Image (cartoon, rainbow, N blue to C red; front, side, top):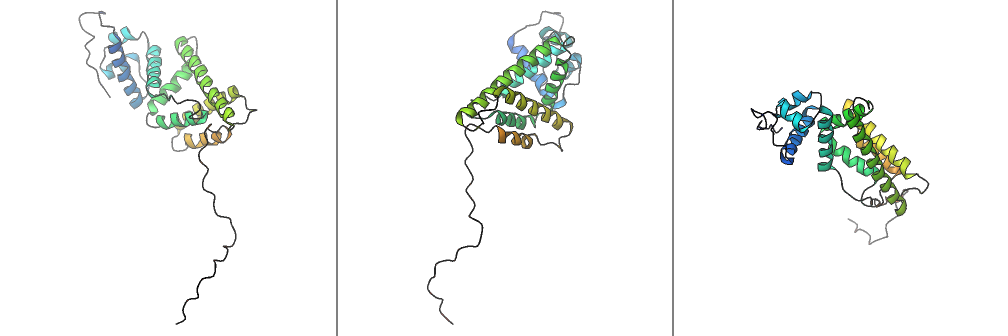
Length: 229
């Protein structure tokens, strides 16, 4: 984890250099911290862990909720998939995300924390707004991928894209939460593959080479008799 030098703190009180570069450094350090250790720490403890004074951290992020939201926003901006709806299905997109998340369980925990806090809107209004907007964006993206499958003829035309998008998002989130609690018992990608049968990619994978027909092997054509000994 990158530990920062505390150049912002000192005798100058709140005269910190509030620039995008310094803020980005703090976000990167906090992201690495959460990926390694999860999010069970106060703002003061987070500052100590990444080498930033509590006063300096509060200068850039007014409260813990703002830091958590911005760290996850930055994570998605860096690692989000930008493939088009014609390139990958709704379920395939979630499968790729789940595969990336296997190496960063701390950021899965961060996401779970954000969604839980969002349910307590009065205590966490900023988090609630972020999570609501994210769900709308995710569902919209997934729905367009379902429509792409319908246009390609790989997804049944009577499936409502918005309903399917909500189902895929719920399945992905729920499976990753179960994996976080019991990683040996839950295989997120394998479980999501079941949904892929219902909502396949607009570009189906090549069909496997057909197996030879079952039954007795037909006799080979007669050849020259082996010489007798």
